[in-house]
Image (cartoon, rainbow, N blue to C red; front, top):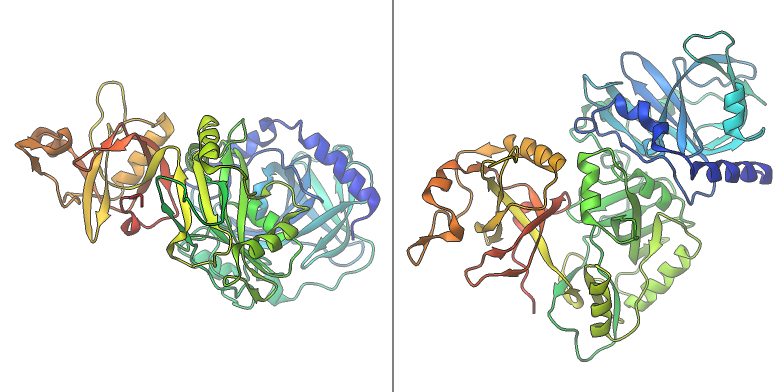
Length: 542
């Protein structure tokens, strides 16, 4: 357990972290191209954590070594330890002090591409609580000597870091203090403490993010496809309905056991490494086992969810504040809850989230007349409301009438099928050509030419160029409507259009659908990573 003195010291450290600036991570960011590597750009300060953390990553770069990291003042203070962690009292291993890393790096496991700084395989070797045993850890590091205890899955005990005098490369010694510790077995040494994968399994994985556990005993909870809400134009006149805010983010199913956490998108894509701070917060929940349904959002300066800010994570080093709004509990400590009424599920959920802090948030019920609520939601610039029948069961994977959505603005997903060339001062491309599926046919919905910044124009153009094809993917282009080319696409424009494989999905805001099924005043919001293209259809209210 962490002592009161250590908790007080950690509290001081956290208070300092609030004044940290992005300069803390300048060296880290300058060395990496986040368009190429899956490493997180990160933010400086991390609030709401009860205790400071440590993480050790086994890193097979130009040489195999261990990256030793301690959470201090909102960043991970980092040392490269070529010979690994000493276990015998008095044993000393060289540790080279390197640039600070973001807190989010503590969840990274995967492949750093060749040609990138530190290119090679990274394993999450161990993680847990870091307990300073002296004064303020930031001051101790500045003074060149830090005594601490580690409470991890593999490491338990005391160590000391001491800076070598007259060292030109900021070299330190990592010394085993306290009593001896039994060395980690060769099997555990070559096994991730989070996913159970070996270095070889990580190195051969196609996805640079976390994969499914190869050892199913680590996290054998089944993925439950999220229940979907039906779009309506008016609130129901009868029935006991509970209303919550509609969030503008990524729907996520969180699978938590006492040994691991996985974050899965609605299409079963692994989000664990991408949102490692969310995974760590779920891991801190005081339950042995749970399946949670919620939405990961990025918050703007007014605390409003913004999909555009969430999208910015894909194309820039900016890291907005993230939150995981949890609104349903599908399983708790071995008990399946999907057949239980919504009110009972949410009562259980509220109890386990009562003492949590950011980034975990409970999606609270909003009381009042839904029409007035919708007016207020619209006034505040939010997306809409979700209504749920109080006694409804959870219907995995179904678009149910027991859950409804009321939107203040019109927006939905569309499939990108092509793009037009740039005009004037714009670079990369002019407009996206988007559509929706009717059965197996992709139907053209219009051109989207606004809503892009320079970074998104460049990134999206690169992604589209990689999947270019010569065939038009839209089943209804070119098409004539009363002697005119549809949606103002002329024969000349058809010749200039560049077509792509219909696999990229984007979010678009618009004013209305026209009578001939096209978008009026569409604006691009961002790319979606959580929905397969073949499931994108036109949303029609009931």
